[in-house]
Image (cartoon, rainbow, N blue to C red):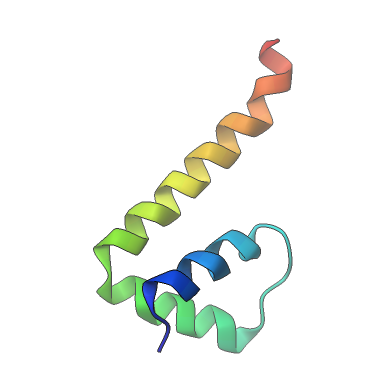
Length: 58
């Protein structure tokens, strides 16, 4: 099972590259048990959404 540090790295990488089935399963298993990493996942999604919209607003 992943620890929080490795899970956070994998969450970040998942936006930039396809992750393997094994990585995805390990990440999801960790997320089911870790509220801090679930919050981090939500924060990453929010930051990416805002960053995508930023050029349109300028």
